[in-house]
Length: 306
Image (cartoon, rainbow, N blue to C red; front, side):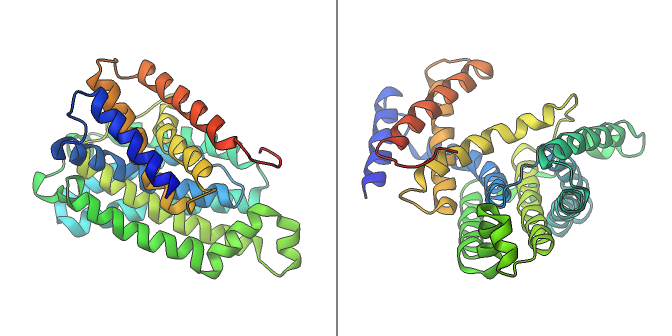
């Protein structure tokens, strides 16, 4: 109840600062539509962090998944759009975890290398004379329903229900968190590290695939990222997870993620309303917000700060 009260106070303050426009239904619908795609990415990061791994290539996977969503969606409608994003997300993230599990390379190093590979693939696909016209064509407006309110909110609640059950109420969810806590103890208890990591790859791949589908449904077209700029796409989901990790002292992290996504995108909306230029200045303001919130979250905490 305390957390809810604080959040309500924050939103009332936003409403007053924005001159009474923030809590208007049209503005809230826009903010919610913005939060769905990064929420699914943030849930994927929750599973990654829970088992102690970091994958910096997820942004590149979303770009390729968005390509597949747009092209196959225009060809085959909703079945093509959904299967395009899911197939790319599943295959590429699962490949990532095969590398993490069997190569022995630190996941963050492998992730950066894979990000560059996926960016190169995206450029090659975009420059291909046959595929270029398909990729540069906007996704058909008739199949972009889940990028708009209220369907995006319905998809968010469905995702919240399923992800919450997997993370908190299944054996694989418990095994993932056990491995993240202590791999040696987990092995002694009979938990298979390789099997669990591959399940993380499957679960995260599905979440990233859904994120790609939603992102393309919202934007209509995806820009190719090069020079590791695809890593920028995970900055906001990462900020969501960091804020959710602070709130998990009071709220389950899976539930905290969409709440934090809404708070963060509300900050961006408020800054835009106040005339703060988008880009670096807004991101710097977001970082200040996170630091202040992090300091508040540490009050009264006894233990080692990771």
